[in-house]
Structure formats: C-alpha cells, structure tokens
Length: 255
Ligand SMILES: [Zn+2]
Ligand SMILES: [Zn+2]
Image 1 (cartoon, rainbow, N blue to C red):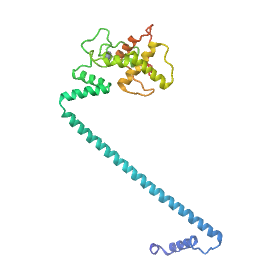
Image 2: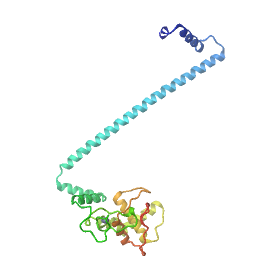
Image 3: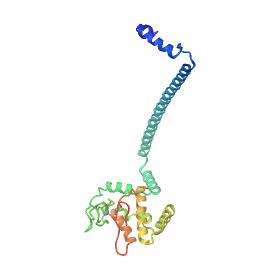
Image 4: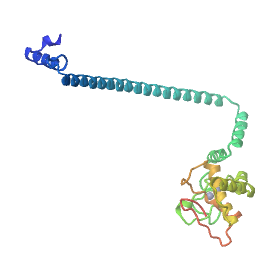
C-alpha cells in the first residue's frame, strides 16, 4: 500500500533489497546460511526490544502502584491523626492528666518535654529570678558552672525547680550505682570490653551515656551531644576525680 505513494525508483530499490534478503536469486548454501543467521539475529533483537518494552512498562506500573500506596498510606495516617486529635480534644482534663502521667511513666524521656512545657507556661526558662552569684550568664537553672569550652556551655534550660539534675529520675537513671553497674556490665558484654579500673571514671562515663539514652534515646556511634553543665557536675560530684581533673567534652565523649 505505502509503496504506491513512493516514487517508482525507490519502490524498485526496495523490492530489490527485499528480494536480496528474503527470496533473492542467490540460492547457494553460504548466502542461505547468512540469511538464516540474519533472520535469527533479527528475531532475537525483536524479542529483546519487546521484552525490555514490557519490562519498562511493568516497572512504570509498579512505580505508579507504589506511589499510589504511599499516597493512600499518607492519607490514612493524616485521617487517623485528625481522629486522634479530636478524641484528645474531647477528653476531660482529669483523664488527660492521668494519661500524661501514664505516658511519662512508660517513657521517662517525656518528663523533659513536660518540664519544658511547664517552664514555658510559667513564662520561665530564661534568667530565673533565683539567680545565684557566679552563675554563668548562659545558665537559667542556677546549677551550671563555668565550662572550659564553648561547646560545653550548655544549660538544661529549666528553672531552678525543674532543673534536670534535680529530678528524681536523674538520681535513679543517671546516678544510681546499681543501675550504672548493670549498664556497664551490659556494655562490656555487648562490646566485649574490660571495665575501667578507675571506678569513679567508669561511673562518670556510664552516667553520661545513661543521661544521653534517657533524654535522646540512642544516638549511634560518633553522634554525641553535650550534656548540660548542671548534669555533668551532678555526676562529677557523685563520682569525682581525686585531683579534680576531667577530660571534658571532646566531640566524642566526656571525661
Ligand atoms: Zn543551668
Ligand atoms: Zn539545670
């Protein structure tokens, strides 16, 4: 059909090419083999193109499907959050207080959020009136001490009453000898390491790690955050170095 639209010369050339490759006059075996080989190669190529085409379509369809699932999931999570917010909004205040208490018991690190929230509500958090003489100007809780490096000049950011280092939880999780003993034993077991011969230094390091776990959860190797000065000194006061020598924060660890 298409040939009728072309010039007769082209049609003639095309028909010659056709006859050469398909039913040409050369009927000797070598050209026959060549032809068969060419045809076979063509078929393989065609099969490859078809399969890659269908594979491409399959991948695209799968991608579309995944996108759809992600969007559906996001919608479901958003709807669930709205529902949750509505339910919380309709809860009586007493139940909310009870629930908050239970949550804090289950997840002690929430205590930090509760304290921060109550500090904000009291309009505190900065420069509490109970400022102690010699208290560094970056401290709001009154329990911090001047630190040798800028990175260590961190306060818990609370009022004097809410300072993290004065929490009962702090005494248990970060300072208690039995808790620290268990934490050290667990670490030695996991990393197959020896306990530090220096008992107080071992407990200081364990206390710093406990604090970080308590407040931030697991940060992973090499990811450390400075501990507020008030908390560092509460630990050092309980497990002091006889000569008052401490390594300080060396982006890796505290001494
Ligand atoms: Zn402070
Ligand atoms: Zn503090």
